[in-house]
Length: 578
Image (tube, rainbow, N blue to C red):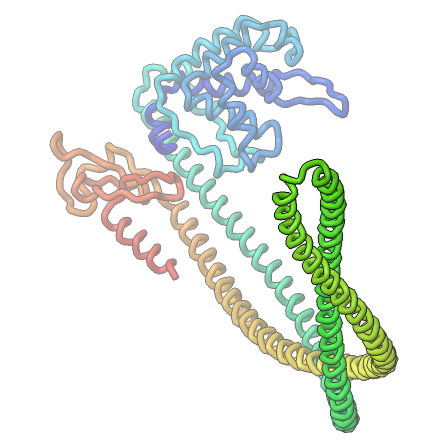
C-alpha cells in the first residue's frame, strides 16, 4: 500500500478489526495436523488448498514458493495473505475454503471458528478490504520471524464511547502515529541487520585474504628455493653440454676429413669403371652392328643363289623343249626322206625346207652351245660363291668366337667391378650410418640445448610469476587497507543511523488541528492553502514548502517531504557517496 500511515488513515476501524480478527482466527483455530515426521500447526496447509479450489490463486502460490528469503510455513502464509490483499481477492479465496467443510475438517477442529457460521460472517466482512489499494512489501521484510503486534484492544470502541467523536479522532491519530513509528523501526532494524551482515561478511573475507596471503608467502619461499636449485642444476648441465659439444666437434671434424679423402678415392675408381664400361659397351655395339651387316649380306647371297637356281631350272626346261623340237625335226626329216623317195618334184622344196631347217638347227645348236657354256659358267660361279661363302662363314665364326671370348672376359670384369661397387656401397652405407649416428648425437645435443633454453624460459617465467605474486601481495595489502577504511566508514554510518533513529524516535506526528500556520513560511492555512504532512519529520506545511518527493526508509516509493528535510536528506546522501 502507499505508506503505512496512509493505509491506517484510509481504512475504517470496522474493516481493520475484521481483517485482524480473520487472521487471528485463521491462525489460532488450526488443529494439529499429523505428518510422517512431526505435527504441522501452521496456517500454510489450508491456504495451499485454495490453488485447487480457485485456479486464479495458482499465481500467488507459485510466487510465494519462488521467494528466496522464506524458510518457514508461517512466513509463506504471511506473504500469501499480503499478495491476496494486493489482488483484492482475500474474501473470494477464503469463501472457497469455508464452502469446502470436508477439506477444512483435516485442519480445524469441529468447534473451531472457521467451521461455524461465524467464519462466513468474517469472510463477508473481509469484502470491505477490496476497496483499499494495497501495496505491501514482500521481498525485503523478514516474514519468518515474529512481527511486533500492537494491542488494539484498548483502542476498540465501546458502547459508552460511541458518541465521543473527539476521542475517536484521538484514537485514530494515535494509531496512525504508532503505525508510522513501527514502520520506521522495522526499516531501521532491517538496515542495521543488513549492515551487521555486511560487517560479518567483510570480516570473513578479511580472514580469508590473510590466510591466502600466508599461503602465497609460503609458495613464494618454496618457489625461491626451487629457483636456486634450478639455477645450480642449470649451471651443471651447461658445463657438461659445453664439454660434450667440444669433444663431439673434434670427432666430427676428423671423421669428416677421413670421409672426404675416402670419397675422393672412391669417386676416381667409380669414374674409371664407368669409362671402361662405356668403352666395352661401344665395342659390343660395333660387333653387334658388324654381325647385323654380315647377316644381311648372307641373306642377300642366299637370295642371289635362289635366283640363280631359278634361272638354271628355267634354262633346263628350255633345253628339254629344244631337244623335243630336235627329235620332232628328226622325225620330220625321216618323213621327208620317205616323201623324197616318193616324189622328186617335192625334193627341191623339201631340200629348201631342209636347208632352212638345218639353218634353224644350226642356230639352235649354237644357242644350245651358248646355253651350255652359260650353265657351266653359272655352275663355276656357284661353286666359287659356295667356296667364298664357306670361307666367309669360317671367318665370321672365328670373329664371333673371338667376340664371345672378349664378351666373357668383359663380363668377368663387370662382375669384378660389381663386387667392387657392392663393397664400396657397403662401405658408404657404413659411413652413412656413422653420419646418421653423429647427426643423432648432434640432434640429441640440440635437444639438450633446447631443454636448457626452455629451463631458462621457465626460470624467467617463474621470476615473472614471483614478481606478479609480489604485486598481488601488495594489491591485497592495499585492498585490506581499503576494506579496513570501509569498515571504519560503515561503523561510522551505523553510529549515524543509530543517532538518526534516536532522533526519529523523538519525532511526533503533528495533528491537523494543532497546526494553523505553515512552519516554514508561517502563512495561515485556508481552503486554497491546504495542509500537508512531511513524511520525514511529521510537521505540517503548505504545498509550496512541501512539494518535494524523496524515497524514505519507511517507504521505497517517493513521498512528500518539506524543504528543510529535503536539503538535509540530500546532504546526507551526498556525504555517504564515495
